[in-house]
Length: 335
Image (cartoon, rainbow, N blue to C red):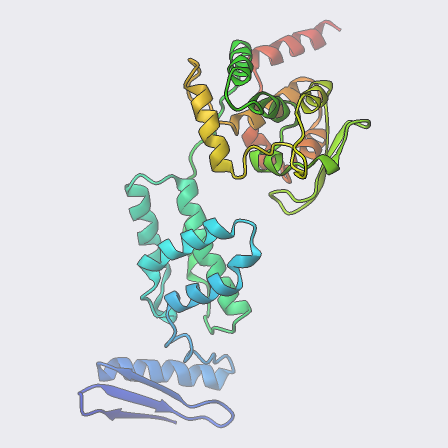
């Protein structure tokens, strides 16, 4: 069934023919490797588990990345970041023939990135991008890979989540600095973040048409996890919204910022006028979730407000004050 012939360039070409299956042709530098491959393919054919690997033997990872960027990336909300990440990965893996990409190659990339000082979360996203690329290639595009090598790679250890809480004095300083800032919508957006646990992207996309001040709710039609949610508004949140001047012909509440990076510039300029250190806007979401727990809300209630889908996700953002827990425990013991 297998025929091995020596070529004029001193390589060994294997030709395998079997009824009902496409012929298999592959060239090797040594005859033992040619014979080993021929035995493997013949065995798979005889056992009915043969997979035609010819396409995987000629297409490169770079070609798959290009197709993924054209067909899959535009469907994602994070299309811009996804494209940048894939193009970066193409520099390392683009030259690989798909069938020759192994888990050891991806593991070596992981170790180098970590050695270069990259965060585990960043590297995990990069490995995840490769894994999804190969999953789509196998399941949707019919690329004949026996397994996804990226799924076999040990995940890098992620950095410890931030536990930054906002001290009472810092909260007052933050609001005062926001009110004195050139960006007059900083104060209300900070208040909304602390009162509602909304993400920055959700706040910047917030529209007046989705706010019901009478019933004190705000509808978020599209969130990070792809689902809509309705957020309850506290009196402080309603007051902050009512203080915002509306712009004609613009449905957005926080209309002065078009993109998150333009907001971040205003945020940094404001913080530079204070003595507050190591505070990110996203920390206000942490603060909001923690305050909800401290006020007695249960896990399901906080998850409904914040939009977290799992307890593990919510736990990452929630840092209760031990002193407050002691007071609660002592109060329970006296009752």
